[in-house]
Amino acid sequence: MPESRPVALVTGASAGIGREIARLLAADHDLILSARREAELRSLAAELAPAACHVFPADLADPAAPRALARAAAAAGLTVDVLVNNAGFGDLGPFAEMDLAKALRMVQVNVTALTELTGLFLPGMLARGRGKILNVGSVAGFQPGPYMAVYYATKAYVNSFSEALWSELEGTGVTVTCLAPGPTRSEFAAASGMDETKAFRGRSVADTRPVAEAGVRGLRRGTRMVVTGWRNKLLVFAERFAPRGLVIRAVKRLQERRRAD
Image (cartoon, rainbow, N blue to C red):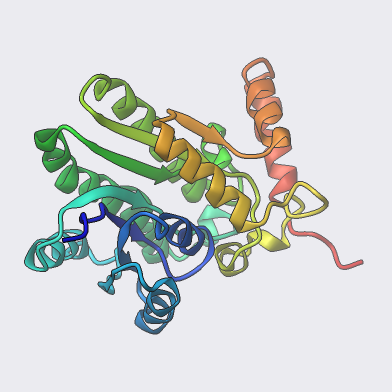
């Protein structure tokens, strides 16, 4: 009998960073692929054969979805050894003009669902004495973000939550890693409007594959925080010493929409 492979659950696996993480993990994991769009998940599952892929569509904006996803995994007899909390979305524009229902869905997906899924799968990992969690935060989580106030705030939560858990779990055999990418070319960026901002200009915008590779390396090593790209590392370091008001004004300028050339 061949030795069974560990199982990784990847949320937001239908596109972008999540899809690339799933592709990388398929080398030595079986996968639970979850996102809203079933057709894209099934196409990815077919691509990743012979890795065993289980497709569980879920909209994490639905408060019932995290527990339903955990129940589906249990009903299939799957033990989640690796949890990748990648699902998330953003929206560009002044908060006062924002669709409030959409803002609350963003908090549900980016914060509440991530927290609940971690809470649902972490106890089992601790009982087994092994497991890994990768939460996709953002460089955006290191400062406030005018014109994307809710999104930046949700990523500040993810960054902080992940680092705190990393410390709590030292010596348990379970690790938590936070992946904090900067601007990245992806469907997420286009859907949120972020690719129209000044931040998405020039060579500082990364492709999804190297971002995913950095995240998976950090996951395997149990690294606390993975900031991708030397420019992003430099910015995060410099912000420690810059006046807070100056940082906020700089971010505000970057979040402004680009004018047509």
